[in-house]
Amino acid sequence: MRNTMKVAKWEVKRNLKNKSFVIGLFLTPILMVVFGFLGNLMGGDTSDNETAKIYVHDELNTFANLEATVEQYKLPFELERTNIQEADVEKKLKNAENTAYFFIDNRAFNEGTLPFYTSEDFPESISSQVQIFTEAVKLVQMQNLGLTEDQLAAVSTPITIQALSVDQLGENSEKEQAMDQEQLMQRIVPGVFAGVILLSIIFTGMMIFQSASQEKKDKIAEIILSSVTPGELMQGKIVGYFVLGFVQVAVFIAFGIPFILWAMNDLPLFEYLFVPELLLFLLIAVLGYLLFAAIFVGIGATMSDISTAGNFQGLVIMIPFVSFFFIGPVASDPTSILAQVLSYVPFTSPVILLFRLVMLDQWSWVEISVSLAILIMSVWLFMKLAGKIFKVGILLYGKNATPGEIWKWMRA
Image (cartoon, rainbow, N blue to C red; front, side, top):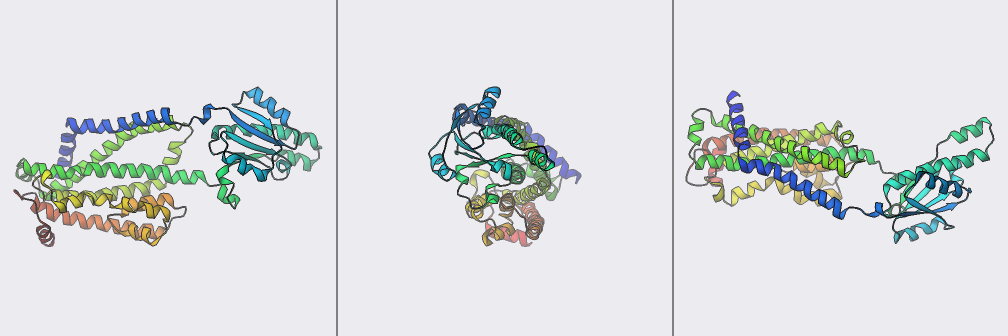
């Protein structure tokens, strides 16, 4: 174990002193932030800068109070009276921009809600600001009621404005319209975070290919193996590039989180990120890395030079990306037989399982447990096989190993 950590430290130090690695380490997140910043400035939503118009269908004679409220608080929209019926709102809003229809009637007293229909591009910030109009409606309510206990209880009942976008008007039930955004974000944010970690350490782990073949090309493999065993060298490389992967993730976080907080200043990012689900997502990401790293380090040792990789070695490099060919079918139906099967296949399990857990409202812990058990056993098996391949392949010079030779080494 001590020699394994020595090899890992050597791999980390060697790469961190490599100018190409350091430049790539910082250049990628910097470019992503720069292009994201430019895209936000040039292609951002300009609807917030345009004056929004709210048409008010007023049956409680509160329009004057609403206008006074807009004037007092200098709210960024205009009010206009209308006699439109709710049945005609959807047709009006389909071709409208920055437009909303506000219906003030006895539903405020009977149901505690006021319908507020918006066009697709209507600013969400204004949808929140119109909640202030409930005070004007409350004033009418108090004027119309006496001071009995029942009436006081009615006055104390809160009134909320129910904002409905035009694309939601065709929904059949109120439950479908009121999607639980918070639960969704608590899956998406940690899922994306774990996905970034998985891809970062996989991309970094692919450097094991180059590392093993470069040591063979430079004739230093024998020198290294005079001090450590092939197993310790292989394990050290896996641990070292795992650390380098997290260094890359740390750099992404250092640049990415401030940009996300700037671009989406109303998003409680850390509240959504640090949830119990994050631990499961990280476990899947780490197991995925260990699986692919074992494959990379074993096959990397079979190549005399990275530039002479044969078709077999080239196909192995593509294994982690096979999952992305199935993203479309899994996204259309995360509970399908195909999605379940792919969650059990070791090569596709890390990406597909992560993606499904983000998509699904309810998780099947039986499926998750089986998938994790298969993944853990696969990591153990491929580590063992990679050790056998690495032990022989690291000392093979002059040619790339054939699939037949690799099969013999694994059976030995």
